[in-house]
Length: 160
Image 1 (cartoon, helix red, strand yellow):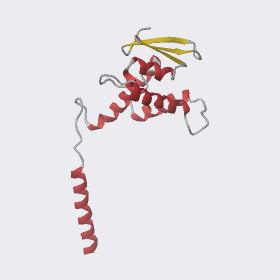
Image 2 (tube, one colour; image 1 turned 180 degrees about the horizontal axis):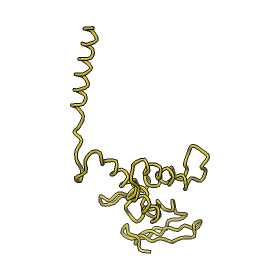
Image 3 (cartoon, one colour; image 1 turned 30 degrees about the vertical axis):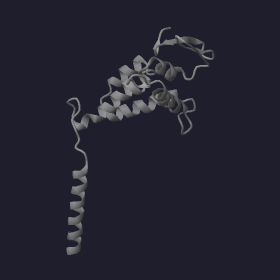
Image 4 (cartoon, one colour; image 1 turned 60 degrees about the horizontal axis):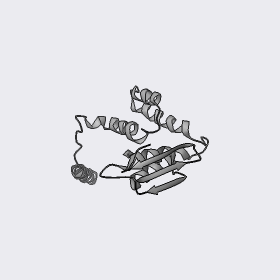
């Protein structure tokens, strides 16, 4: 019995020391730690999928009341865009996040994340251009396969 009590005491002290070493949970923007999950969903809506979500989808998402509903919405959102829904992999979602990562690595400028730049927006939406024409004044991206554009960039800004 003493051994069990001793073991429980040691385990309790160990647990307390581990918890004490954890960084304190902070309140962000006046929100309690319980509402941090809302921040995840706000980020998903306003950053992650901002370029591909429809206005109707965004309206519907904002009206959801629970995290469970939001998770289901997100799953359905990606499933609607999945070119091969019967498989384990969602190629559209994977490629989309690869484009975001590429934009962040290659188009960031002056402290602005690559996904927030004009080039990032075009790249995330439509992928790699078929041709890039560079000149002293900027770049022109041509998308023959999509029959859109061309898009001209000067000083990292979309001009046309």
